[in-house]
Image (cartoon, rainbow, N blue to C red):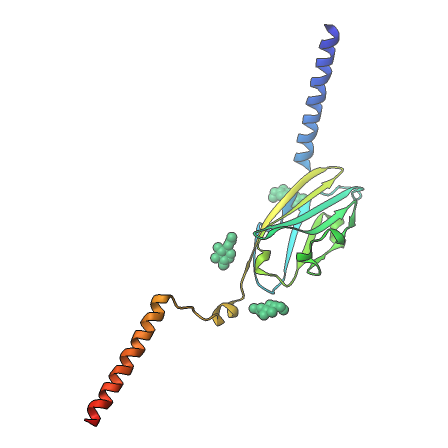
Length: 187
Ligand SMILES: *[C@@H]1O[C@H](CO)[C@@H](O)[C@H](O)[C@H]1NC(C)=O
Ligand SMILES: *[C@@H]1O[C@H](CO)[C@@H](O)[C@H](O)[C@H]1NC(C)=O
Ligand SMILES: *[C@@H]1O[C@H](CO)[C@@H](O)[C@H](O)[C@H]1NC(C)=O
């Protein structure tokens, strides 16, 4: 029975220490967004930025970053760093050739992603998960891409069937009026 008591004691110790460990790392390691929402026009470009806790001395030995876009058309990877090395192959076709990262600012704890030739379907929730030996956290921001203004203006207004019928009735009335006037004049 004492053996069981000791085991129970050890188990609760384990649970307690792992709990306090996860709480303290969650409290000290953060990922922030510099802006929680962005607005941009189609075909323009934008720079999204996240910041994460850096060490007071040196840089991280382990650095894992995973950034993805959660859109109406699916979830797409736009940036991936594995053990401090960028993995361009992980990027989805949706973003290929459109995302430029600033690798120099990574050691300052900044993820800067320049996304160009924006499409309306890029709109969505952008999130970056960051993991280092200090902990794990993630930050998210919203991106809203609006269609270019000139494209909206050049779109022809489409008529409803009622409007279409109304147009034909007006043309018919004009035709009859003109015809009748001509007939009366001849008479
Ligand atoms: C994250 O945001 C909090 C609150 O604004 C701030 O105190 C902290 O310094 C920021 N940390 C980083 C790494 O940007
Ligand atoms: C996106 O921007 C448009 C135009 O400014 C606005 O009408 C719409 O509500 C925005 N959508 C979101 C999800 O913020
Ligand atoms: C955006 O770029 C695409 C491809 O280059 C082009 O076809 C489209 O007309 C452009 N749209 C606007 C509104 O400039």
